[in-house]
Structures are given as structure tokens and as C-alpha cells.
Length: 238
Image (cartoon, rainbow, N blue to C red; front, side, top):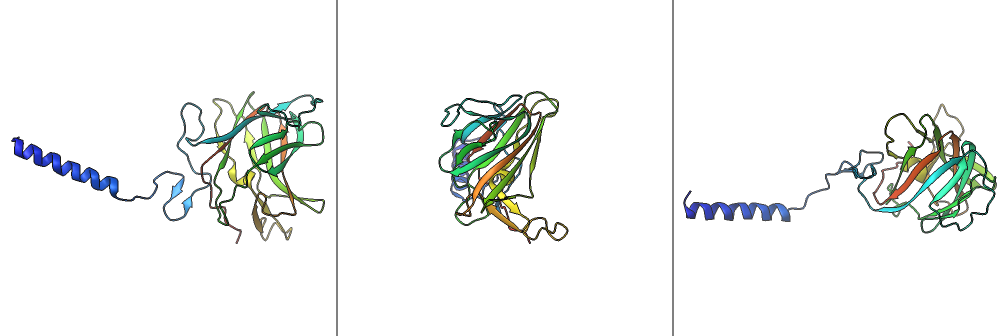
């Protein structure tokens, strides 16, 4: 090839590269739909070192199932772990605020306490972060997680629960954002008509107290991470 043709080819390639860089393109991540926006419970690009999505980890802790209840005070405890019964139920009461474990003891009958930011992006059907959990420990244990709200002493729980199962083989990461960050309520109590009449995000109702119900059946360890990845759309029931 002559020097003139070579120089011309270089100029053309450079122009094409510059045009490609300047052309705006929509996100192509599997977490994003170009029409609808972020997609809940979609496959995510994994960080191969951890198995969790390749986003900014905002907070993480281990949810530990223990055979005997803890008696020590764990209010304001700095450890990144929370205790629940290995077999049985516990409540995790939620407060709006920075990510933090306020009371790590969910085995004393008073419930654990956890603070987390309002997940909703303004008045949209999306959250600005997601919740991902990896069940660990001995295989065959499972844990059911349900979001609830308490209004005037009455506990109303979501019709959407998530069952974590520690299967055999390598533990896998599961997206539990919808079940942990929203509450879908059956207001008419007629399941045959619509088991979910109203969806709320955590902290939507200023007069309500929000919590997670934990029903543990032998799961010893669940690694919980809050990752800055949009989730949704969490649409209202029809």
C-alpha cells in the first residue's frame, strides 16, 4: 500500500472512531430496557470475584441463624451481622436513614432493627438501589422473607414473599429487591379476585411502621448486600 493510501485509511478510521464516540446510545445492560428503563429481577453483570453485581456496594452484612437466643444487648452494635433463630421467626423493624444495624439481636422477642434510605426514585416505579442475598452455610436450609407494615397496631404483610434456599453446590446470588423494598397488599382479602391490590415502597406511609418478617428453617448464613443498581418497574396491580 502506498503512503498516500495508508494515510487516507488512517484518517477514515479515525473519523469513524470519533463519530462512534460522539453518537449518543442508550444503555445496553441486561438490567436496562431502552423503552421501560431498569428491569427488576433481570440478569445482572456479575463481579466474578464476589458473585454479586458489578455495582457500588452501599452496605453489607450477614444474617445469621443461631440455635440459641442471644442475651447480650446489641443495640448500636457495630458488627456487620444480625442474628435470627435457626428455626423459627423473627422481625426486623425498619427505620428510614443511612444504612446501619441499630439492633443486631432478632432472637430476644423484641426484634432486630435496621435503618436504610428511602429506596424509591421520586414518584416513579423504580428504586435507586437493589437488595441481593446469597444463602450460605449447610445445604438444605431455607428462609422466607416478607415485607410488612403496621398501621394502628395491625400488621399487614405483602402477598409477595421470597424463599431463599441453600441448595447443594456453589451458593448463588439472588435478587430480592421487589420483596424487600416494596409491600404488595391484598386490601379486599379476596385472593380469587386479586391477591395484590396496592403496591407501596418502604416508607410510603408516614403513619405506618415497616418491617421484614423472617421465617427461618435451618439456614445458617445469608450474605446481604445493598447495591447501587436501579430496580423496577414495580408497577401497580391492575
